[in-house]
Image (cartoon, rainbow, N blue to C red; front, side, top):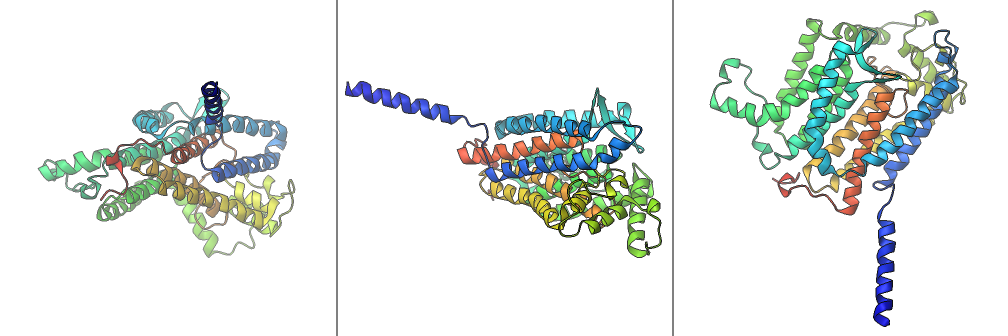
Length: 426
């Protein structure tokens, strides 16, 4: 009888453990709070900022219509975060090549079958939804580069990634080795992504390059090679501008406008001649410390895209500088949480993946914010998870889910990457 009672207790305890074994939300709790906070802010921003679109005779839709759209996107995004954070990092490792190849093909296809706006082809129409494959390619590049760097950690400090600039030397054994061990597996995927994205969205190509460069730095690629890469990238950008490749003319015009705003007096300019950047700075000035109040923005009807490209300025005008600084800190907090998750990773792939994805999100937010205060020329970057835009929100949600996946596995101590992929191996 005692043994039967003991067995019953053991079975009951096992049943309780099994019932408690599955949790819908796991991983870094702070990051979950940040995601929820950004989702709530996105509803407030989109609902108020789309008032201009609601009064536009060409759209003839109410603000409630755009609110429903944003809520539907969030209804899609939250389950995406939950699903992706339940998938182990090893599976992401295995899928990285396929994800990268498909993203490259789709981003390339945009130039032939995609929808064009303001001279840039960026979207593939899918019924009521427009897919922006470059958003997927940004994540896929980080995913694939993390795999390539992780698999070479035992020899990474001996690998060169920049071959000779003289093509006649490429047949030499030492140059063939550079191409085989460094250029093709590590550098080429990054450059291909940048080249494919560059014609339609220059700033996104720069963002991918910068994120990849930092990942290579953290992944212990030789500093001499990375400095060479920076020099070559700068020369390539100058050459693209000189030859007017991609959207170089548009980028050049934005740089000229940015310089003009800093060097010329704008006090006598009529409001209908103001650039969106100038209007965003007026919105920030109007907001002050505490803001004008929800729904009280005056500049939202003057900006072309207050719900996307200038969402942060619009947020400052309605909610004030204090809450706007808090919003900025939320994005910085994502990166700091990623650093903490990275420190707990024993192997390279999940650690590099987390830092790369967090860099993408945080740097995109910083680019958006710096444009609104005229620290850099206009980029067209949205505010992650807040600005109106389906593709950006969906792929940001996927990226956050991947970060949470690594965090969950850290908590469960379930990383089963090969020991040869240790990021700390010398």
